[in-house]
Image (cartoon, rainbow, N blue to C red; front, side, top):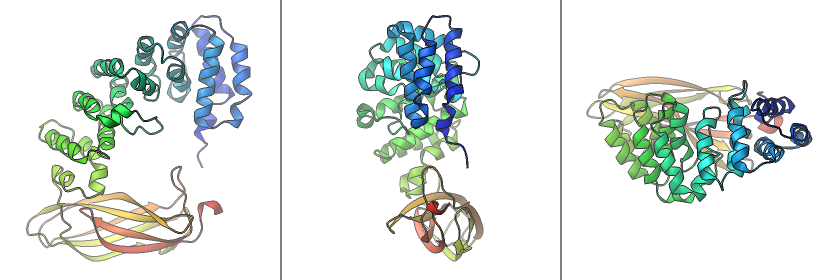
Length: 367
């Protein structure tokens, strides 16, 4: 089992952050910083550890925010300050810079190249919306892809781990305007963020997202994989407009010769294999989206379903396809498994066309 991410923020990480501040050449309270942080780390979870390091660092610098951030930004270039280790530096801006938007946004343009400032920017969208969006518009044309990604990722309506911003939820067009500037970005990571942002918008505004996707698909140089990723939630729901935008059939015009799950009894950590044979009954060649749905058993015996991508199949009239898929049933950070019968549905064009089941003999608690 992978080590918890919170353990990255240990005494060694704290010392590395302190070394970075030392490298910026300013006098500060390193000893008090390290003592205050290391005394509390072990009892805290991930985000609280990050916040603790950020708060104690700001306190140990002992100066107004504009002067403090003038030390933090150069420190971010110290060797080893990247990835998660740089997160507390971004959090200094998030937690202590909201009254200084200009200096904070300037700092984010540098810090986000070390660790994404997608969380740090949220309070500024809440309290300084117009100024922050204006800066985001400038960033969409930055030479650095990590800076260009920030406008898309930082303004996502449903940013994972990020607090919601009412204006982004109420008016998705603000974020959509930024996506328009980034839809042809040369960097795949930026385009992936564009897709994730648009997928967020589809929760509340599915028809608007279909309209955008349809227009983008008509552009000869559009990244079709980006558009497919943006529509993934609507495709799993069988949204006809999303299906049409991507050239998929909107009806499940198939016959199912067989659909099986094997083995039918497993223990946590085992894999199941799905096998299906489908035949097109359509009058013309169609491209079908094929998914599968697992109805996970909850602790109280009820179930909750999740749709998983399987494949796509282009079939001529009367043509058959045999498809298989393996999936390991194991505890993940977002899901616990409970013993019991788990129904599995075969879904074509958003419609359930067959079902099978497997029985899980033990639960996450038995590991």
